[in-house]
Length: 263
Image (tube, rainbow, N blue to C red; front, side):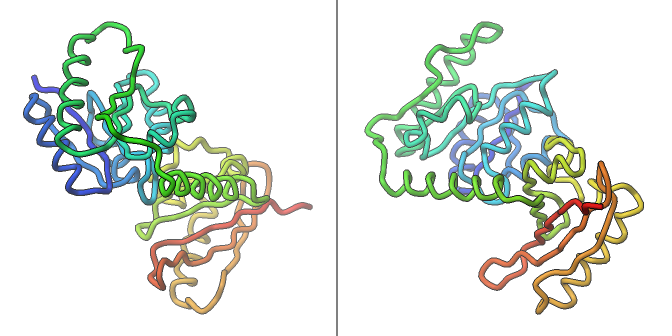
C-alpha cells in the first residue's frame, strides 16, 4: 500500500515539483495551497507525512504545524517544513515545531536533497528521528529581504496577540482563519477545535443567528466601519463588533472584535 503525503505551499509550481518527486517514490499525493486548505484536507484524509511551507496566506505554516500537533497528538506523523526562509529562522526552529526542515533553493539541488531525505526517512522507519533535521541544498545564505519579511510578520503577530480585545479573522466562506488568545479565552475554545470551522460554531446556539445576521448586514452596508451585537460568552455577555476585511478594496472576509461586557 502506498504512503500518503500532503504537500502544502502557495507556489503552484513548487507543489507540482515536489508532488512529482514524491510520486516517483511511490507516494499518493494530496495538495493544498495554504494552511486553511490543508486543515480541510486533514478533516477528510489520513496522511503519513506532511510537507509545508512556512510563509503562506490565510493560515501560515506555524499555525498549521501547531494545529497538526494538537489535532493528531494521538496519531502523529512526520512534519517537514520546506521553506526559503528557514535559513533566516534557524533560531526559531524549536518554536516552529517541525520534525525536519528542507531549505528551498535551486530545484535541481533541492531534488538531490529531497531524495536524500526520503532515503534517510525510509532507513529510519520505526527508529529515532535524525539528530540533524535540516536538509540544505547548499549556497543559501541569509537574505536581508527575507529577514525583514520575517521580522515584519512577527511584529504583526505580536500586535494581533497583544491587543486588548479578542480578535477573530473569518474567510469569505465564513470559516475561521485566525483567532488571538483573548478570543479563545472569552469563548472557552481551543485553536484545533475551531480553525477552519464556521464562525458561528464558537457561540452558544442562542447567539449564532445574531452573529450571522450582523455579518450579513455589514455586507449589505459596506460603508459602515462596523456593526455590533451582543452574545453569550463563557463567563458572561460579549459585545461583538463585525467589520469587513478588505484587501485592495476587495472583500475577502470579516474581522470580529470581541469584548466582555462588564456588569
